[in-house]
Image 1 (cartoon, helix red, strand yellow):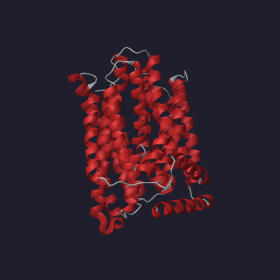
Image 2 (cartoon, rainbow, N blue to C red):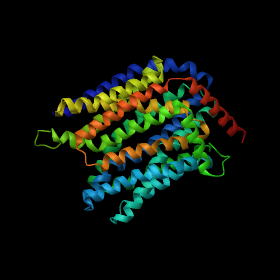
Image 3 (tube, one colour):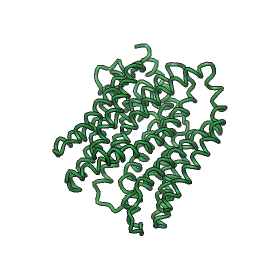
Image 4 (cartoon, rainbow, N blue to C red):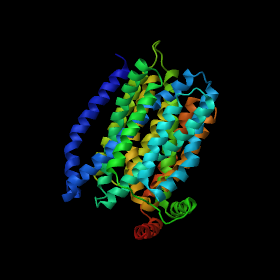
Amino acid sequence: MSHFTLTFYFLSGLCALLTFLFKESKSESTSSDRGQSGKDYKNFRLNYLIVYLLVMTGDWLQGPYVYAIYKSYGFDLKQQAILFVTGFLSSGIFGTVVGSAADKYGRKKFCLLFALLYSTFCVIITSKNFYILLFGRILSGISTSLLFSVFESWMVSEHFSRGFHSSLLSETFSMATYGNGLVAIFSGLLANWLAEHFGITSPFLAAIGFFVLAALVITVTWKENYGDKDNSKETSSLTQALKVISGDSRVLAVGAVQSLFEASMYTFVFFWGPFLENYHKSEEGLPFGIIFASFMVSIMIGSLLYGNLCGSRNIPLSDIAQGTLLLAGVSLLFPLLYPNEYTLFFFFILFEVTCGLYFPTISTLRAKVVPENLRATVSNLFRVPLNACVVTLLVSDLTTSIQCLMCSVLLIVAFVWSFALEESDTSKKAAKIRKKLEKKNKLM
């Protein structure tokens, strides 16, 4: 039995143990916040998580096979790079526009638009025409921006409009991250089975079913909510969003941390495989399925740690963010100092644990500091520098070691930025501006 398999079993056991140990403490710490709305909150949370995990299942189903399907069509590395970069550029260019439009015309509508666009991409990718595939990557980029902005924006707005306590957001985000790890493992197994029995395009077609199912649940159970409805042009929302970002050091810090961490994370996705292969001595290939499953369990462990730190121990979000970012930066620096298969895998596992800590932390921070009426707009503005960083790192002809070093540097810079997440006089002044904007939106 390889050390990869042993690590997976150990992580799975640790995850199960932490799930059991933290269950009671989380229940006790949130009971006082739920009050008499406990049942309503649980129903709301379940409804959101069903939709969120359905769309994430669809995303995970086809994600691992995008590279494989382009390779099977006979495209060389340069053509594949163009396709991937097109997706990131599309997300950066169109993301701000769709985010602003979602705030104005309704987040529910744009969640449904996500399902339509991503399903269209999954159909288009079955074509072998390069230019049709390029168009598909544009749709994929827009879909990615919607996936990581409008669903969260809808949930946070609905959470507060129903009068639920703000502390419960941390629990929802933690459970979403935990569930995301579970569905990623399930999706990987299902996608592998589908590809073996029905061909490499089958995971993409199966993903459509999950998107359609999510759209049906949204249509039947979700109410519409809006952000900035009073502006006649999307550019007005963008202008207001830029003013909020520049006027509030904490909003700016959240954006900087998000861009830097996620740029490192997306780049990591591209280099961890080749990096490990460079130091893999066995004649047998790397067990990518086991490694991927280990990464996902690590994310689940990180989400459990977040729930315990933020819930039972009541540690400030800014402290969790600082610790997470420092640990993430170190986890991608040490493999360069002691490069071998075992240290690489250990520190890559550690990095994935920080990802599990990061996602609920940054989501809760966004919910606290980003104005409600501009939430999707601001969230997508944050993705512009993110995508710019990823494209720059990918198109540069860098070795895996240099890419890893650059990611570590970005994470250390994010760690420095995270100190601005603490409350300041400037933030308090800007908070008044946010409240005025939100009050104005409610009166419309």
